[in-house]
Image (cartoon, rainbow, N blue to C red; front, side):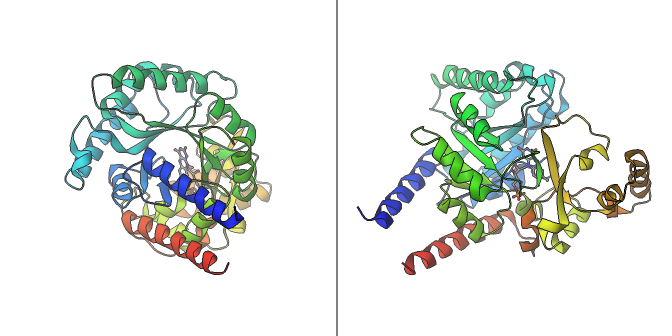
Length: 375
Ligand SMILES: Cc1cc2nc3c(=O)[nH]c(=O)nc-3n(C[C@H](O)[C@H](O)[C@H](O)COP(=O)(O)O)c2cc1C
């Protein structure tokens, strides 16, 4: 068979796999990333209503008294209410909820996941559950959590309509992708170092990371999504060409009308160009805010501020922190942290999340049609 024809068949197969896993979505699959302090039920459901897959961030505190888990319960109730009416298929309370929920797993309280968090998921039945950033010092966290989720779904599915949420694990290396697949992930998000926010401290961009992970997982029932630096249809088309079956966009959705991102973050994103130079991967962005809880294998990409320039000039962390706090107290936002991917220079407007989703998807289809016509 001609290579192009084989590729077309492969594309059709992957497109139908995502459509069967997430029946409310359209091809190609555009996913809005879970983002702490940014995503909310309105944003996620608008993405879903537009044929993408919206995620909310469920937090990292799994203790029995966790206020974050109470908030998650409320947010999932709210998401179902927001979807009511738009599609009768989503409205029944026993129907799977066509958005995803994500968790950051490095905290020791992740050991409580099955007791404190699983019941909330069983109650709301989200379409996907996304895990990220287990602590290297607790290698059982990921396998135990994936196992608890599988057992939980199995026991809850007998009486009600079938519900098989997909288990998504975000990784930054081929080895981590193989580990996630081995422990039962349905989807591996290949997060490249162009990504905004937290990520593996060392790694590759998606141009090499995605195809190497796709090849490593060949023959397994595991889909790969690409994340990191994708902000428009061109990026999505490129991700598909690399073998991904979905594209995850974070920074682009930070300036969605519905996002919780504060004004200073929106302004920083809209005014920053040349993201490879004007964003930087560092642990400084956490440490300057007094957050030393992330394991050192992770860092975060954010827009360059005077804080980073001071560090480069040799200002010690104590003094730099004083400057950061003084600016904050004075209402000077120039030192505030804005997590952002390198694609920031391509983001020119604040749009409703549904419009971003449609525009990105249609842009990708246009690019693919253009490439096909050039054959
Ligand atoms: C503001 C912000 C917050 C984020 N928070 C999370 C998070 O809580 N959990 C998570 O798994 N990923 C988080 N990420 C990373 C995203 O999942 C995704 O990998 C990234 O946004 C993709 O790169 P892009 O921003 O260039 O699109 C965050 C990203 C940003 C920009």
